[in-house]
Length: 82
Image 1 (spheres, rainbow, N blue to C red):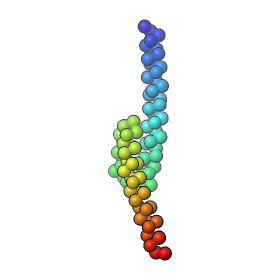
Image 2: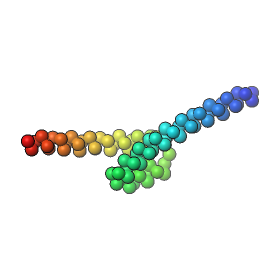
Image 3: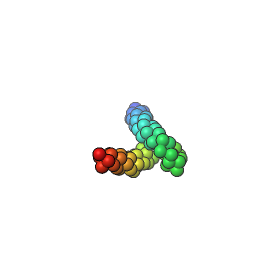
Image 4: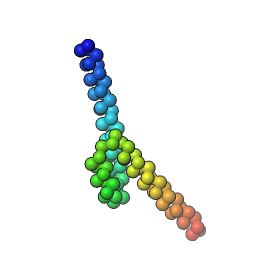
């Protein structure tokens, strides 16, 4: 009985460590992007809420699409000038 409990606690500890690393990576990337793009509200929300990477991933998906559209418009504008 005690051995099973110890194994369960060890398994939980490993899962918790992996979840912390996962959250740290996504939160770090999203916070960096929010600060760079001057999105203050997003920055504060990302800093306060711990959502196991869900909120940072949503932020990055929303704003990555905007960045892709901006770059596409710049490229097509340069081609039109030629």
